[in-house]
Every structure is written in structure tokens, then in C-alpha cells.
Length: 313
Image (cartoon, rainbow, N blue to C red; front, side):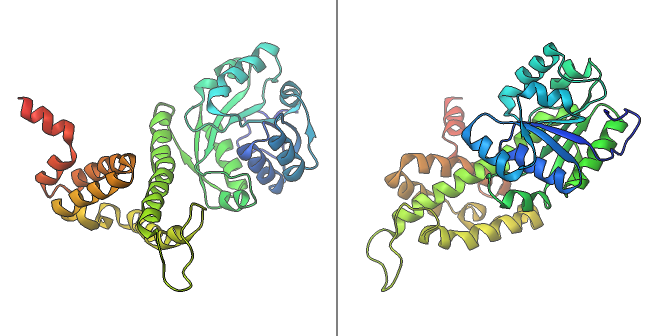
């Protein structure tokens, strides 16, 4: 039977998951590890079917409406752009019973998107793991070190969300409904853009290392996890660790020092390799210079638009 709204600490639950993507299959495996029973999942693509069969081998593969109808805890782990449509469809079909705990994993959305189901008696929760998922075995291990942004309609909902996250090995963190977009933007900025930054830096480093190497040195090519990545990894890892531990005090390098000549030379070298690399460097250097706040001349060098606006006055 669906759990009562008055019970803040759910017992073992019958869990259904829509769909068996990277996130849904990882959370399903974590919930099973905590003692819940994932009876069914919906999966359409070949990759989702494979994850369902390998990560949740005891679960039935069923249409979404059948998964929803039998769930005490229903996890909607679809992409952000599909969530509202899925919720509307389940509500219109009357597929979710009153009292069902309905969880979505979207970072961008709070519980408002679940309103059509909440109006029919479901308990809405937004539980977003602040972690990137690859679809491989490391996903489950990473959950143990992940924070989860949770949003609920009331304190009972927050208590249930907190209990579920702790059972999965994560750390629950309360995010107000009105701050979900800001929360999601911060995480996207700090993770997605970090990938772009590292890949751009690797591309520039490959160009710098091209040509004859030392005796026995690995050939520099375009394959990932090569020499450029190995050279950058300790520096990037230390910079990330320092930033998380020391904040802005971790800033080093020519931009932080206000070295106009060095930064100008960097821009020219990058532009000669790929103007897009130079554009990315310029944008991030401007933000770094604004944070450091030491040399207006450097900001003038980097901020073409701002300099043009000042000249037009």
C-alpha cells in the first residue's frame, strides 16, 4: 500500500523507475542496496534496456503507466525537457495513486512541475544528485560522496527526502523552491563549463607539444588520456582542490598578478592556434581579473566591449 503522508520515515518501499537512464538506474541500484524493492522500470533505448538488465536484473521492464500504477515510490528520472510532459501524461491517465511518493531527479525543477500529480494526492519531492553520471560502475561509488538537492512541499516531505538520500549514501541539502534555477545554474557552471575549459586547455597543450619529443616520450595525438592530459591533470586537480579549500585565495598566474604583457602574449598565441580558444581564454581571464581587481589596464585589454563603451562616451 502507498505510505501515509503522516509517516516521515518510509519503511521498505515498492519502487518504480521511469526511466532506466544513467541516473535512474544508479538510483534504483542504490535504493535496492538500501533494502527497497525496485519491482519495475521503463526503458526504451538499447542503452536503457542494457542498464535495466545489468543494474536492476530482478526488475520487470514495463510501460511507464504500469510502473507508476504499482509504485509506492515512483522515481521520474527523465531529462528535464521531458519531465513536464511525462507528469501531465501520468496525471491525465490517472496512473499514480493517492499517497504515492513521486520523486523527480531534475536539477532545474522544484516540486511545481509535479503539481498535476500532487493535486491527485501524490506526495511530490525533488531529489537531485549533484553528480555527473557516466553509466558505468563508478556511478554507484560516487553517490556515496554526493550531495543531493532536495525540495519538498512541507516538513514531512523534507523528512522523507532526507531519509531516502541518507539511505542511498548521499548527503541531503535543502534547496528552496524559488532557488532551484539558481542552484542548477551554479552546478552547471561549475561542472559543464569545467569540462569545456579542460578540453580547450588540452587542445592548446597538444598544439604546444606537437613535433619531435624526447627519447621514449609518448607521441602527442588526439586520443584522450594522453600526454597532454597527464601533464595537465596534477595542475588542474591542485587548482580545483585549492579553490574549494581556499576560495579566491587560490588564484595564481599572470591574470591574478595583473601581468598585461603575459596575458596579451597568451591571447596572440591562442588566436594563432584557434581563435575560439583565444575567445574562451579572454572571457575567463576577464572574470578572473575582475575578481583579482588589481590592474585596470588588464581589464581594459580583456574587455573589448567595455573599452569601446568608454571610448564612445
